[in-house]
Image 1: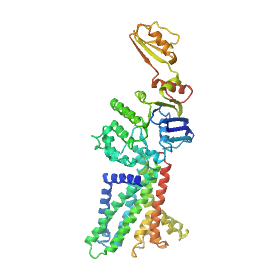
Image 2 (image 1 turned 60 degrees about the horizontal axis):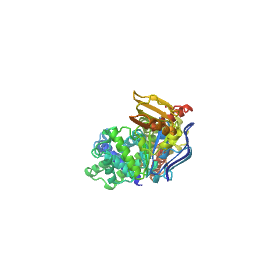
Image 3 (image 1 turned 90 degrees about the vertical axis):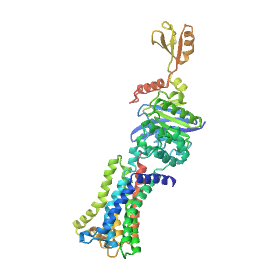
Image 4 (image 1 turned 180 degrees about the vertical axis):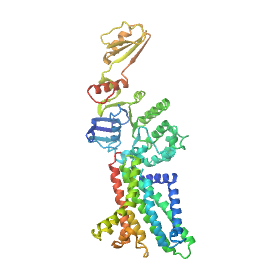
Length: 276
Length: 303
């Protein structure tokens, strides 16, 4: 545990030093406050609308940003150490590969967690301070669920970044692969699912399709955040499939956590196979 | 005496490529050993085996009585890689502190080592501003964290000026006196000879020779060179292998090591002004084994 803490401490210090935490916090805070007050501007309405609408808008934003930020934060975690010449030295220390990767995961996870808490938390504080008659309990519960699930989504993509970083022989390759993973899960997957729906014209069992949403962590994340409100449960596009998904919120949380664990185990396996 | 490192019939394959062939040698406690060979001879691969970074295909590698991959064994190993690199954004002090935490070494030791390697004044500067020599000295400091029982130094003098090189060897001698065993891996031979107790010579993954300098000289059977200043032009002796005039009054005679005394006795009968006896140097021995490896067809060996 001490070695994991030592590595995590170094990664977190690096995050503070190179302004990652500051940059992500500011980005999230500005976007979150902006969306809270101007998210409904397109429909001619300016100002705070409702907590479910705000969370829905923020979740849509986070679906794009969290995976990208997590991948950018960690795509060079292993290959960067190797290119920098420090990986071999680290591996000669009384430190296992598992401890090294777990330490990096904890450190990067803390950076993401803190930045998300500060960034999105500032929107919650702003609502509490300036919006009259808002239920504090609902606000804390909704933002708490949103922030925790956002961090979980970020952790899934941190783990993806370690898989790619352990696989790639060059930092630039890892960066390219990271963009590919982001593109696949954030943009392509839902389009592909919709295409299948249209092309097959119902030939695929209707019971099967909603389950396919669980194969994409960003869809699970959206289901958690959009499905948490009675009025907001009905999604658009591929999210409409969720209406037929016979799983509860606890199961969705378990699935997202399962993604973190599974991809992290994959990263450990890939890193163990990499030559030191 | 206990073996600190023990390689027994070690073979290593990377796919179909055999990179180490039946390697067997030992390093005993308190010894300084030189690991020499041309580029690609298997020096760094041997070091990686000892460090537990790769596993042998067959044979046995024992380090400090256990497996090198064992954290308790690694705790007692210090390693200075060739062209050591650190995190450029950290200062020298932060770098050493990070590695000290991983080794469980205290803050006092960090400050002491920075002073020992002459980096106290630069400890607050970022490593990216360090010269190659400064990085090498910082690398040495990290290798000495937690007072290792086994120290592996891969090309330790690269980037060091002559005074820093002498200081490094003095420090290595001091560590040996304190009980550490040291492996110096290098293809730069000049200067290292006085400091090593033993040498291992590799060529293209084969062990060519192992032993102390006397043993290696005896194994190689290289001649002793005797230089005289005086009237030696007409000197002859049946044991002299080669006579080479160096200048008008200096002459060099190559004689077998076993014939050194009889030839000297004859030479001392001449009215000499000066005499020098030069046993085969480490470089001579190394060249001999590289030529031998080349002659028996170990491809890629450049004598």
